Length: 516
Image (tube, rainbow, N blue to C red):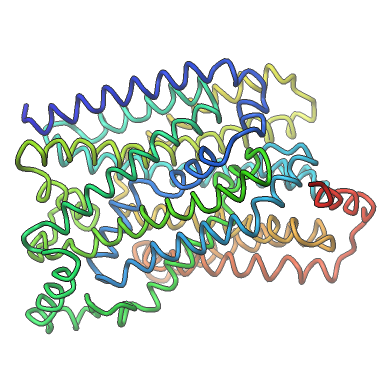
């Protein structure tokens, strides 16, 4: 066993003990369904802000997005991180946090399907939303598992990737099942601190590498590399030092829109606003979360943009998903300090992924236990049984995601993009319009969900039949952005030509905004 492996194992053991302790401590506060799913709507600013940020960024961002886009776009990829912080975080908090907290509290909605049911008076919409969440968030979480497996496989080449995915699955299941949302929120706070420390250390290590030479050196050396390989790079449409991505500008814009506006409709992100305790906490949380996202997002893409210099322009054998693991081993693989930093970075990426996994698992399990099963049975389930069922389904969802991740699906970024774009495309219109407008009808909300589903599903089917799935995967960002745009447009148009049959009930719902 090498020193790097030994330090990483020690760090992993300490981390696992800390997460298990948080789960055990949180168990007593998670004995009610409200407590288990949304922390009793009493979560503070720091915890909610870090929970939002850590759910936003997983190992897929580092392994998939930052590695691939940093390699293919260069310095311009940093705009994705900036877009995520400003559009996906800051604007989301400003526009939706307070309204979501107030309306879901009045409706006593604990999940997004339950919000749809009570806002639009439709059990059918609740069932449809729950099915979409459960089905399409499985590949989302599977992408996270594969990202982590690639990272740990780089440090422990003798250990099968599935072993690491299984360890991660078990660890996530333990504290999530024990403590529910409260456990995940407080572990997110710890994980967020680790992420900030890890990213700062990694940025310093990358910029300090001989092939990079600081931020100025990064720009100069990328320009020199571009000049030396201009024929090959220009032919591929790659302009590493163009701040706006050059010929990749359109692709860059679609990725910014997908990964930024996509958070506006993802239930695991919006759910953080259900739980925050008051308006004052929202104001503080907005600032904290935005700063967190700037550090993590911009840091990840800055590291990715330096990858060609650190790896001497040689794409690793494992393809784009192996870029960041290879950078880590090159930058931190030697010397005691480097090995310690490597262990910290591994925990950083584990933290980033586990926070995303726990949010996705909790969202999916609650969609089935709280929304789908009671609606199908048409019979009220006792809260104690719902609690037990939710805990069991958390285990089931973790297992399903693990099994899916062990299959040979190589395109990690596209896998996440499909799920991200489809789920957000289905929900963004009915959710946002439902918060802001009294005129939105049940038919309009249904049209928004179905149009988002058909936009991604239909485009994927057509491209796959006429070309192949790999070509469809390349267009997953455009599909996701199109689905979100279509949903936002269709909802008000259909609502204009359909009748709202329960105006008095809707008027009463909107009185929630009159409260302090």
